[in-house]
Length: 566
Image (cartoon, rainbow, N blue to C red; front, top):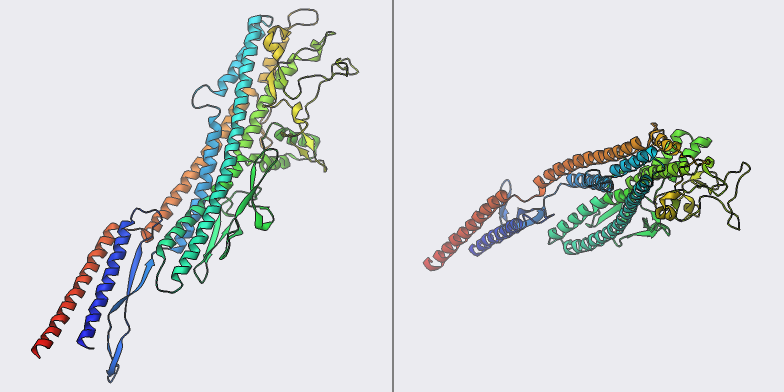
């Protein structure tokens, strides 16, 4: 090699060391950038020149060093594990937050609790039993009944509003998924376009794409692969989401009655994205992604006591076994913490309301002037009893007034029992929260509460009967339970069940977060930037740069000496 050729060897060392220093500086400047992956320099020998033949080998002269690659340091399997665990963590965290928010409406941990409201109503009945003819006791009873209904309605409406809030979150998360899909598609194109010539690595774009995949994995269950040209192909919930050329965006349909949105795939003929009837398990990967958890928490309708009553009636009629009813309840209502709370809470309110009304309006207390007055009336059906066209009360063969019965279940064309939801013509006949109010006539005149027998004597049995029914057997929480409770123990069991759900979700969410942190720590050991390591590399590359500079100076001095001396 000529002397001037030796200068180029030194220049290659200078350039390669400078590139290495720039990469190290880039790592240090992004040490706190989310999703950044440290970059590593790979150096290689340049092509050798053969200048002759020796006995055992070619005689070659090196041409210096070159930058072979600037690679990202990642572990594909740790990335996959992290994204799966992050998706599970997001799922259980969303479940926990929904259950915690649901419990907060009852104020059992702060403020005036719903239990206090029940106790006050019970106390008013107890006082009424002592002096049922007392105007003060009647007004106190009406007051506490009004407070009970007002508080019950407020809780039920809050649960409905929370469903609407979750419904808005569904739309937001669907839009976020689509945004991330378009972002990944854009980054796919940028990366492939930059790296197509094989000269440059688009590492910063790769970091952005991996960050987008991390975010997408928290929203839904994804799987992905990189094809031969560098495109990342993504499946979401088993359906093709990101292809090389397109993003099959997620859409949603809206229920006409509830207004609830259901995520669907347009490219699959509006097929639903999630099958919420599948058992939630880690083995089947059905517990991944916050979007699914939000859909489960929201449910698909406003539940009420008929969601339980219809199944109980089916068991009583022999069209369902207890096990089938329990399974149907879990699939239709129990999977949603909000709907389960609505149904079981409404069953309690319905039971108290109808118990009081039925006691006040017992047939034996009616007379020729008409039936006694109920305290709670239906907003959609103001009358308790049937009337003819002239407004006269109808009576049966025994002379009793004929009530307008609740249609607390419906049947489909195959005879299956169905709940009665809002939008149904039968809903107006239900004594359900949202369709109840205190009788305005009694609010104006508590004397309409007639605690008298037909002979005019004070009826002490009426209030005593309320107390007896309050303490008697009422119902099980739902078809999956066996123990029958009274009103007081029912509410305690109801809150215990809800608290247990919160505790379970909290425990799983915390345990899952530990898994995420551990996996991320292992991932950061591979791809994270260490300031100590990068500073060590900077010193090493700086020394290499200085060595190349000294080499060039030596060659330069040698050439100068040869030119001036000879």
